[in-house]
Structure formats: structure tokens, C-alpha cells
Image (cartoon, rainbow, N blue to C red; front, side):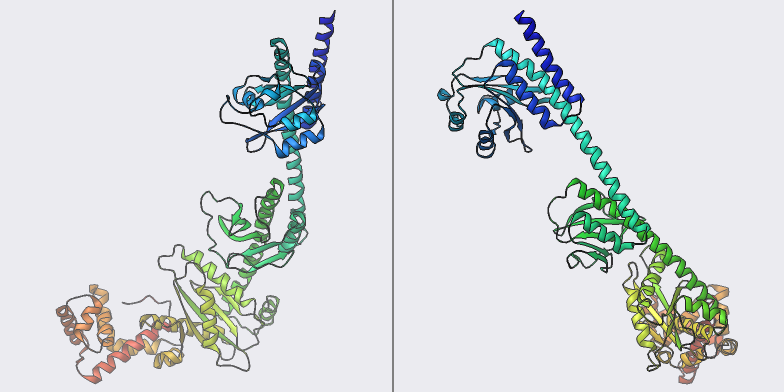
Length: 586
């Protein structure tokens, strides 16, 4: 009869453990139930469940029955059970945990090295038994029983505690899984709430500043959004300086975490089209982030990517409108028509003001995609233009950056300074090797004429190997004056009378007589220097010069002939500059 009652008690206790897990009770509640069940079933004075700490260096009392809270606190804070490396040394709980077998102490007063004698005396126990909590994946802790008197734990008593420990280990593992699932569910739910909140801010036109403010509220720390060039796009919370001056807006390095610690601060990359155009910094935050805080930063990065994409799309549409307006003006549309004036005003431009025309040529040698670099350069130029009122009209046009720039009434001769300002701005663009800007003043709102003159100045400078950063008509001398003629026909006629035979010979025979003549004049009729410049033998130069003199009838040793040849080359360059779209003949 007693055996039936005991069996009934055990089955009821195990059923209670199972029900607690199935009901989704928390881990702490299940642990307490394990301790109280063991104490009740086995008639123990005290009972405790010990689990390893996060570093698995010590065992700490996670739940108990009969033990005082003072004892538990003193053990956990002052004398946690160290986990030794082997199963033969250390406290009974450590031996049980390492070996996976029970470890008993009949009388703690006779146990060598038992350092818990003081607290054990306060708690009033003399003997203890530690049984491992074993699962399929290994030992997860120990179930300890304590008795007030000296007691030898027999095989039957040990077997019963082991049996209970098996069921307790299953219950604890199941409770952990349930708790992990609950935490994951809560994390996903909170994460979704954060994402929806940030997205609502963006959708309701809160913009980048609104997203930064929402993130500040969520994380309770300073938030700073910085563009790759170093400009602060938005900030929330206590004022803070950007941790870095800027960075190349290129693809992140392989293996780089989206959210990480960098330069002593928490940072999250904002990725758009495989590049990092912006970053979120938490200037005052150090150390590891909580999981939910990390999720908030990740969601903020995604929402900010969408917001930057929206802004970029709007800017592209606006830039396309500017490009269409500029193209019409450069192809001869009347800038005084009411329709053009109205369109310009909507975009922030005043076509009634005095302007100068700027044409920037960008060297992208060895820098990858020319089209992408030109687009970035145009973006940089427009970023500069956005700070000026009335706004300059700038767009990419036929593989160059073209600007119609308002000239202050107090400084009509500021064209070169304006050109230098534009050149410096574009030079900061990634992928740009060098920038040359030609400037031409407008007269009577003749935008198309001024543009062709500036473009021609670039062509002339290119042929004359003029490497100055800013090209002005005055700087080109006589060539600059001739460029303003507008009609290349008379200039071509003059150049053809002198250089026509050379040009035709080069075209028919694939020679380079015009280039040789240009180099020879540039090197002051020095044949050795000309040969060195063209990387040929001096005898080859002599042969070419004789052929040039035969075809043109000039004696290059005669000063007058040399002057005539120089003039003809300059006129040829100017003629090509005015009609810059005509293919080169050399």
C-alpha cells in the first residue's frame, strides 16, 4: 500500500512538471518547481538547482527550496562553485557536473577543502548529494540535496534523485526552448513595431530628420546621420561631432557587418545600390548593443536607404528637367520666351540675369566608368549650385559638365573665379583625375553662342596642350579673339591655303606631318628636341621637315615662314574649336 502511494506521489509530481512546461510557464518557475518537488518527494531538508554562469566558469544556485535567500545570495556572490577542469577535484557539484555522475559528502566537516563550511553552518546542513542534470546534448547543471545531520546516501536514495533529475532535465530543457521561442516572438514583434514606426515617419514626410529623431527616442542616445562626403544630414539628441571626416562611397568590404563598432562608436551602414552613401552613428554609445537595439539600427538603415532612394529619384527627376532646359538654351531656344522663363523660375533660375557659360572637361583616365563619374561630377556641381541664389543652371551635356552661371552685377569680370570654384568642387568627385573649365561671358543672353565659344576654347586648349585648370578667351590670346568670330569657314579657308597639302597627305598616307610641324614649332625649330618629344630618330624629323617644305613651299628656317606656319596652325585649331564637333584631322 505504501509503495502504491509512493508511486502515485512520484507520478503526480512528474505530471506536474510536465504540465508546467506544457502550460508555457517560465524557466524560473519550472526550476523552483523542480527544487520543491525533489525536496518533497525525497524528504530532504533543503534542495537546490545549480546552473553554469554565462562563461561556464562557476555553478550558481538558480532555484532552491528550504534554503534561505541569505545563504543563496552569499554563495552566488562570494563563493560560487568553481567548475574545475577535471572531474576528480573541486566541490561535489563541480565533480558531478564534469563527470556526469553523482557526488556525495557524508560529513562536510570532514571534507578536505570544503570552503562553504561557514555558510553551511549558518544554513545548518552537514551532508549533501549532487546529481547531474543530463540531457542528450550533455550536462546542463546539478540537482543538489542537503541534510541537517551526517548522512550516508545509499544507492536507492541516489537512484531516486537521479530518476527525478532525468525528468527535471527534460523539463528544464523544454522550458528553455519555450522561453527562447517566447523571446524570439517578442523580439520579432518589437522589431516589426520598430520597423513600422520608422517607416511611418518616412511615409508621412518626416524625412531623414524624422527618422533620426525616432531612432533617438527608441535608443535613448545621440543619433547622427552622416553622408559619405562628411556632411551631417540629420542629428537628434545631444550635439556631437562626426567621428570621421568622410569615406569613399563604395561597396562595403566583404564580411563587414551592417551594424558594428568603429572608431570607438557604434555605426550602421546605409547601403544603396551596393554603395555606402551614408552612415548612422551613435556618438555617445559604446560597448555591445542589446539585440533589440541592434534590430532598431538595422531597420533604420533599411528605411534610410529607402528615404535616400526617394530623395535621389526626386533629384534625378529635377536634374532631368534642368538638363532639358539647358539643352534647349544651348541649341538656340529664345531665353526671353515666357515659357522658358517660367520653367526656369520653377527650378530656381533667373534667365534675365547676366550669365557666363562654363564648360568643364573631366579626365577619368584609368578610373573606370566615365558615365558614372560624369554623373557624380554633375551631382557635385549641383550640390554647389544649391547653395547659390539665384541658382546656376548646371547639367551634364555631351560628355561635359555645362553651367550657365549668374554673374553678380558688382563683379562682371568674375568669370575666372567662378570657373575655379566649379573646378574645385568637381575635382572632389571620386574617379576624377583632373578637371579643366573654360569660361565665356554672355552678351545679350546669347546662351548658345557663349556655350559654343567656351566649348571651342576647350578644343583649342586641348590641341595646343594648354593644361591650365581654367581656360579664358583672354588666356588664349589671338586664338581667343578668333574664337568669337563664330563662323569657321574663313578660318578654314586661310588654314587650307597653308596647311591643306599637309592635311591631305596625312589623310591619304597615314603620316603625321601636321603633328610634326606643330611639335617642331613648339620646340623652337630644334630638331633634336622635336625628335625627343615625338620619340623618333632625328633623321626621321629631318626627312619629315623636308617633305613639309616641299608640300607647302615654305622654308622653315625663314622667320616669316615660321610665323605663317604658326598662324595657320592656330587658325586651324580655332576653326575646329568653333566647330568642335568636326572630327580631328591629325
